[in-house]
Length: 157
Image (cartoon, rainbow, N blue to C red; front, top):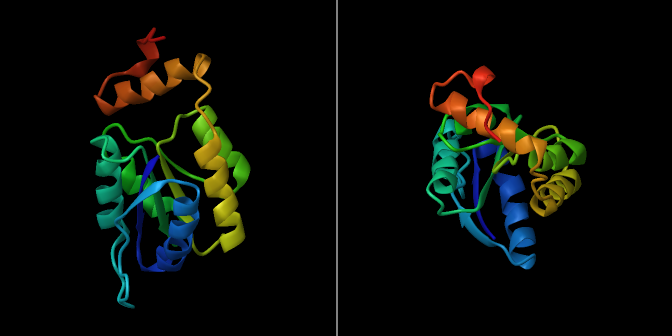
């Protein structure tokens, strides 16, 4: 699977440690991380936009973003049509974001998660398939919101 990675200055170390793990698992990594070799701050929306657009255009199957909390990255990435970004702070939220919401971008906190938990979250998220079924209708409604439609009247299946 081709994975786009991005981070701001607070997520730099986490991304640096995730790249070899993903590559050993056979994934192709496309990195859009910020601040490599530079201690100056860089802005999370810039990296979120790059990764989210890689996913939107089909240049990557999924994206992973890391900033201080994961929240800013998630907010920015979700502005890109076709992106379903989710913050995961544990393995359960990672699994449910994939199985129920078909999340295609994972956002994580460099400040609140240790490296071991980050790796477990990524492993869980990468290995969890979308369940489909009743969740297909709900994901379709997310798309309707993206195109400024009221999803409440939808009968999409």
